[in-house]
Image (cartoon, rainbow, N blue to C red):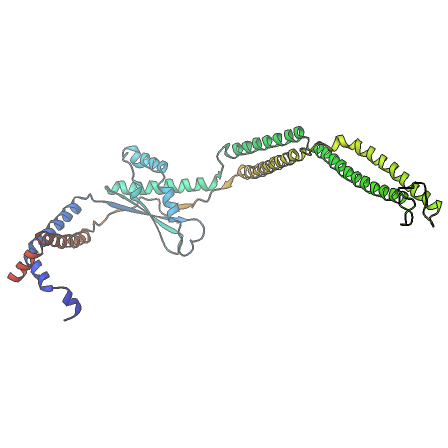
Length: 380
């Protein structure tokens, strides 16, 4: 005995169905009878077939124009027109799009139009009128150019133009009011003045150092390499000529004159450079705002150019890709009875009823409890 046989007790299963076979049989009987009655009550349908030939070469392998043809033939406007044309308007029953089928014929330019109705004459007339009106509509749509929705592209173009004008106005107004160029020149002048003031300060310090050195030589002590001593200002040290003394005195005088000129120039710049250069922050803020407005204007300009191209393309009508077809035969087709497939439906109902019966038996056994199941199995 295999492991599967050990896990599954077939004797208990057989005993279960021996006791419950009437339940399974009743379920199958009820399901089969219900399916037989339902299929018998379904109304009979008749089908008329009209062959159609498509223009152009056959579709490539794996593709078909049948869905496009069916979409055209099942349009609500066309079906209403067909209803009005059937039997000169006497039969005004609605045509269900689910009763219209279009089947491709592989590797050919033909498709089959199938129409199902409860009446054979109505099925034949609907198929004939639908094929004729559909062929006429396909020729009409293929010949007429497609025009875009009026004012659709024009409205977007006007909106893009308005956005561009608004961005341009904001940019020009900011340039006029901010006066960035004037502010830049003013800040450049201030920076140049500050650099000049720093240069003057350095020159003044250098000249003061030269003056101090010259005075040290003029007021030096005898014998220490200096021209004069502080105790004897008028005395000169041995070996020092009057010419050298005059040179140091002349250098000191020139330094004093140079220092006076530099300090005068420095005082003239004091009023310009004493203020902090706070306008730099204002300049940076204005430049950032200007850059943002320029970017907005560039984006608006590109959007306007894009909409202008779309508008020009939309003005030119383009042909519509509609499958054009013709009716092979003008006479009304013969409508044949559609098989109900009762045998297949009944067989499916029997199988489904049997499975439902099995599930019902198992549920009943589970409801009674495992103990009663064991007792009944041993008694059997």
